[in-house]
Length: 335
Image (tube, rainbow, N blue to C red; front, side):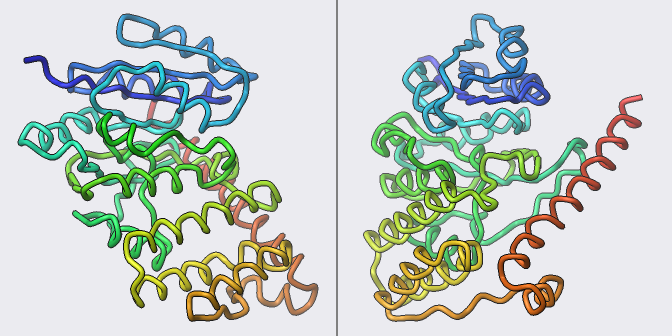
């Protein structure tokens, strides 16, 4: 019998700097039965032209009007034929044996409803500088335990770590195109709910490119993204409680609300009020969020609004310096 076909699905928007490396990492997969589908989401740069240079029997490139990453993913899935689905953002990379390592587990008779995960490490330009720092999600877990740890500890798994059977993907339903932030977090909650559990494959590595404020997951001060994040948080809580509604789950949900309260504080008092009510409904309460000492003095002198602005501005400046330095070293190493 033929080995299972794996579909590598790549949504892309204004990714001309990265898309070639991403497609090459997909082509380099040692798992031979694969198809690569790139959906350009109405890019205004050269993303489509770069991607089309790779078109072949196994690489298919499509274009849609700009509708967002979730819509591009849904379109890519509708075009796919794979028995397993590998989601891959247009700036991230897969280790050459990532899929093969996870498919080894499948070949041993793993349930198609098992969700396969793997380690991930952030990098900027220099791949060998990626840092693989384990967290409490880097192990085999039940869906309920995964979500308790994620919410309580404010940790996550990067999108490309997952390898999902078609059966499980169809059971989870499409990506929510109304969520302009945290759409991946909400989507994989539904995948987990439909799964029989999560199997962690330690040798299957993913490289997560850190691109700062240009990444889709960046929320900043966008009201639209803040609203979407709050809706995703409400769904997270509902999903977890549908699996288990114990005291530890309610405590994790309250902590989850507390962890993210600072993101909304002062700018969206309406959402803050809803968060406080949600915490009370869970049997807890929320404290005024604390700022680190670097920004607390700004709050004291100028108020919350300026402290929040500084909290967004200074890290972006620091990030710009670090990125430029890493890019310079990358150029030197290439020479």
